[in-house]
Image (tube, rainbow, N blue to C red; front, top):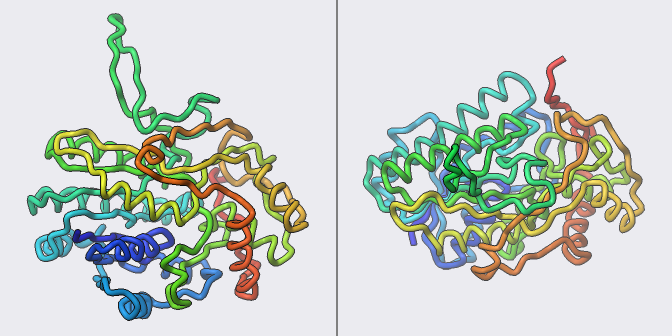
Length: 386
């Protein structure tokens, strides 16, 4: 299958492109390399020494019989060039990672808020519009977020996979609608807008769309990125882009206290990076039919309370725990149960948090701990402007 991976140079995009290539697909990575520019802007870096995109692709093409190509393009700004790319490559599927992915970065200031909205909303709409205009039969697989649901809506009831049944009006007629959106940041807000665009284009133009509501990703390596040191995936640890478990493991590696925001009563959904790439492949192989509403999967394999997660790592590494002021505007605690039955029925065997996987990530953090910039560990983005 011919597949475009938009945002294929990123934390999730790069290992996904390799995984799909390894499965025999013809892969084109399209990326504007903005994530690398944001590292420079923030004065931080990947903990792992990632190669430039040209070296990455050259390395993969040397060891794999299935070649990957790269095209540099800002799809949020260059619609007509994007449309011509669709015409020439004629993808049968696209994987859409081309969105600014950090909630803290999206709340940093007015500039990052505007950038997140402009980039994310335009990128998504340009992909949808281009597929309609080129009349391609192309399945869109979009990486969304569990954050579209918000936290606390359903308490101890499982978060359903995208849709919920409601009773409407005086007749109490039963309808199935999108789960009410409750975004907690500008980033999450753009993902809820994606949902509305997907619903419209499925209804109006019969596009085939799968939206993956993903939990917090942890880990860094997959089977493919381990094949050569030049293929290593990025590892973010800073206060803006570092996902919480990776951040905790990095802090433990350098004997820095594990920084919990507030009391740590927040419960979050998690998934290992190796399961992320498998889920993308499963989604590609199970597209919805033309005319169907968007297919929604909850791409998460377990939930953990952040204070429990910190205690687990503290017990394993003897790291101390530090409670810091929560920069986010959120409830101090929540329950979270997630329905992920669709992926399980399609054959996903989840890698939940365990000693072996945690050791693998810890080995990465210990190996590259000298690359840590201590000034970027603490959060600097505040949800409330004072």
